[in-house]
Length: 525
Ligand SMILES: Cc1cc2nc3c(=O)[nH]c(=O)nc-3n(C[C@H](O)[C@H](O)[C@H](O)COP(=O)(O)OP(=O)(O)OC[C@H]3O[C@@H](n4cnc5c(N)ncnc54)[C@H](O)[C@@H]3O)c2cc1C
Image (tube, rainbow, N blue to C red; front, side):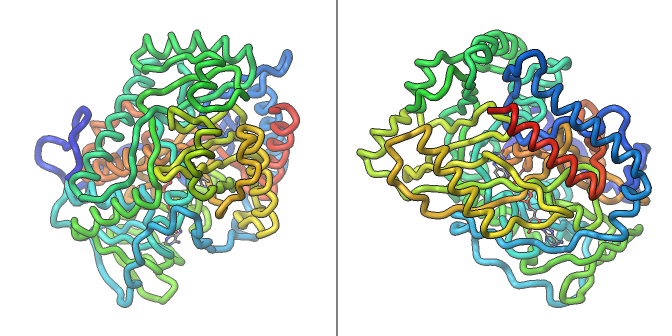
């Protein structure tokens, strides 16, 4: 079903079943972990791109890091409050309903779980991570009973609320040459290979997710950054990550706006219809025999050699392996709070543009683009010529809350203003609809995947930091391989069995993110 487009997949040899076969020596990762000396409160970057714009003597990254360190200092001073906060004021378990434009293409939800059941693997969360993990598990461990529990319907979360950009690499390394060029290249190849896998999946399942790869454009505002980017493009390309440097004129010719000083163009990237991608994976999972229970909120996890998951209706799912594919909602279940914060981002979409409106916009390349703001703006063009724009100022609501309707209206108004700044001809084109989605942002924008828990049988993937449309199914495959005992294949991965730098609890989290956003809004103009 899934393509073998890059090294080592499907795995050769006899698939193993980790439980009862392989041990695991990685240190257990616990919620109680103390402040990470290496990276406490580094920049909270809601970014799909590099962020190196100049701010006089002090770079934004340094500024933000200083803000983060100050917050860490306060948090350390209040260590008892930090430790007690989740116990005294736990997050409310609430999963908001997706009403995005993309959600119109989500399939009808399956019936909820109506009885207590047993399974070999229980997956919580019906987004791209959960669904792809289920599909790969079927391929690696046929015959195992895999169940997936989803609070509302598959695609309820970020997977069908996003900006539709299909990008290579991970958020922390995207277009940023790191000190590990070989790893950068492997990640690039792995994720580009996954785009090919998604195309194969479309063909095999016979469903169109509107995947296209016209490339993606990372636009740069300042002349200095645009000039410096030429050097990065050469370095990246030389290290096996093809990237083109575009001048101001090339950028304007491709995307129709003269707002930018230049760009980096990523030929391997593209875009898709997020709702249709979820539908595709759901169809593949259903065909593989995965028991998909929707409208089934998991309210409690009792960990053990066999886990016991309680649902809102009181039914119990018992399974020796648990996969947390709950993304930004994980902390409400008491997991991975220290790894990522749920930061709200906003997206809105126009009706289909007429031929003459489209000609006025002049977005000839059709390639989606994002900018180099820390609170990035990202735009795309759908197959039926709707323009969607997301990003701008993000929100964090105290203790994992949800933004108010007023806030949505205000953020969508700002998105429209941003759209008109780029494309003045769209001034009279109102949005058809807009929505919000929670992004699981880690402090250094790095994702994490692995296993944890007293019995080493809780699997997780988190911290995509706004760059998960492609990465989710890469991590779904990795999760399945870890469950099957193929850890050896992923030892090179810098995100394996680790968590991003420590994020403090409330009220420090709220204070830190507020301070961070204030810094960014002051300096990141
Ligand atoms: C506004 C926005 C724009 C973005 N833009 C892009 C982009 O352009 N490109 C890109 O690469 N990435 C983008 N992302 C990120 C990307 O969408 C995510 O990284 C990715 O979809 C995460 O998928 P997931 O399956 O891990 O999580 P989700 O899709 O969030 O799935 C988690 C699921 O778990 C369910 N759930 C939660 N708690 C429970 C529970 N207790 N019981 C049962 N079910 C539960 C939820 O209902 C949800 O369906 C964006 C994200 C947002 C929000």
